[in-house]
Structure formats: C-alpha cells, structure tokens
Length: 428
Image (tube, rainbow, N blue to C red; front, side, top):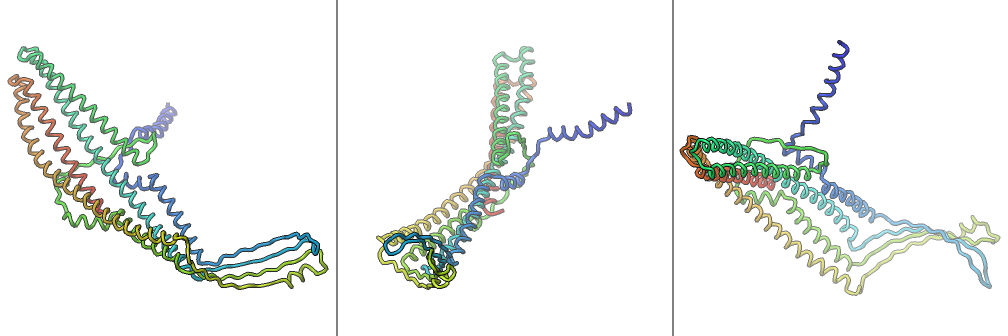
C-alpha cells in the first residue's frame, strides 16, 4: 500500500505540472508582442539580409583603391619555313588607378549611405509593426469589453423573457409582447456570437502579426483603462509634428534619398573627367628544343615595363550627357518626395490629433447620455417587472441602452488608440 501511494504521488508530481502547462495559454503584454515581432518578423529578417549585402559592397568599394594584379602563362607552337617548335611566355602585371574622376571615393560614399538606408528601412518596418500590433491589441481589448457587454445584455434579456412568460401566464401580458421579448433574447444571443467571432478574428490577426505557428495558442493581458488616460491632455499639435519629423524613419529615409541623389549627380559628372592609371609588368619567355638552357633563357629574356596611361573622354554618343541630365532631374524629384513626405506626415498627425479630440468629446457626451439612458431603463425595467409597463417600452429602452453602451466603448478606444499612435510618432 505504501509503495502504491509513492507511485501515485510521483505520477501526480510529474504529470500535473505538465497538464497544467498544456491548459494555460500564455497572456502577452503589448510590449512582449512588439519585442517578439521585432525578433521574428520575416520582413525584418529579409531586410537584415540587405545589411550583409551592403557590407560586401562597402568592402568591394574599399578594395577599388588597391592595385589589381594578374598573371599569365602561355605556351605557343609555331610552324613555318623558317622556324618550327614550342615556346613559352610568362608575365605578371599590376595596375592602380591614380585618378578616376573621384569615382572610387564617391562609390565608397554611396555604400555608406546605402548601409544607412537599409538600417532606416529596418526601423521603418519596426515602426509599421509597432503601430499594427498596437491597433490589433487595442481592438482585442475593445471586443473583449464588447463581448462582456453583449453577455450581460443577453442575461438581462433572458431574465426579461422569463418575466414576460410569467406575466403572460398571469394574463397581464399578450402573446405578441412575449414574442417580442423572445426576439430580443435571440438578438442579444446573436450579438454575443458576433462579438465572440470578432474577438477570435482579432486574436488571429495578432497571432499572424507575431508569425506564430498553427499550433501556438495566445491571449493578451488585459489592463484597466483609467478615465484619466482617455481624457489625457494632448501635447501641442505643432510640437508633435516637429517631433515626428525628427523621429519617424520615413523622414530620415527622405533625407538619405536627397543625399544619395546628390552623390549620384557627382558620380555622373565624374564620367566627364579624365582618368590616370599607373601600370607595371614583369615577364620572360623561352624556346624549347634549343641548345640554350631553360633557366638561362628565362634570365636572359627577363623584362620589366612601367606605363602611365591618361584617358580623356571626348565623345561618348551623349551617354554621359544623358546620365548627368537624368541625375539632375532625380535630384529635383527627391526634393519633391521630401516635401510630399512632410505633407503626408502633417496630414497623419492632424488626423490623429483631431480623432483624439473628437473621441474625447464623444466619450464625455456619450457617457452622460449613457447615465441618463441607464436611469431611464432602470425605471422602465422596474415597472415592467411589476407588470406596470408593457414589453414594447422595455424593448425601446433596452435598444437605447445598447446604442449608448456601444457609443461609449467606441469613443473610449478611439481616443486611446489615437493617443498611443501619436506617442509612437513622437518616439514615446
């Protein structure tokens, strides 16, 4: 008996924690969701590969300043009236660019800018993900509250339907009124199903944003939203806009594009400049089937050369001219792109700011309306329970209450989401 008790104890000790862990679904905080997405998002990982390519390009641009070295070995067979036989030739040559119109230097600058552009692209992806996850997270909180409201309304509708049946049996209510109460209960039940489906879909969207697998379960950590958060005083709109211009990656990318286009223009001009190259080579040769020793031939035929080559572009079929003109137009284009980015940023900030203010005002008015509707509903519900009010009146009040609850909920989360996104644009 004692042995069996020990076996049972050991079994429970090892199995219960496992079973418990299988039944508990991890609750994610908003910060955990964002950090996890930064580490596992495939789009970010793909852009990070470009960083490695940028490093390769940078090393290649540095190597362009070094001399190039090449060697050659050739074996030749000659057949003719005067001579016939094999001969060999061996050489080693090197070339270094003394001046190429600053192409090498500016190409190296290009690789540095490209590396910074890639890093900014990663930041842009991260900001996009952060905003998407914040929106998805708050939508889950919204539908959780909407589901709670729908369930409470369904319970009240069920209670009123049961009360209506009692009144019907007592002869103080008609069949049509009881049917209306049944319809109300069915409608409230449908609202519960709709809210649950919407909540499940929002959780699925968040799960997909996090790149979780098909077998992974997830839920979010709920938190109480204080009214002080909803009605928090917003910063000055102009100040928010200035911070967004300094903080958001798309603005930095627009600046980098301006720098890159200016560099491309300088590179295009470099094609008009002369290039100066220093070259040198050493070599030797031999002839087979002769009385002279191979080593002595190699020594006697050993030669060295040094050259200085100047190349001046005179006419390139307007290719250089076209390249310069296109680079100049591109410079103008990216200036417009930057102005467009500023305009889009201003529109985004102004829209979010207006949404936040409107939602705060809507929240206050909807809350006042809800308090009035709740009082009116309670009075009608008390009379209905006493058989002093018909079902039509309670249905009207219940519908008004449902609308008021939804208005408060919508304004609450719209105000909070707008504020959170404004904070993200400010780097908070």
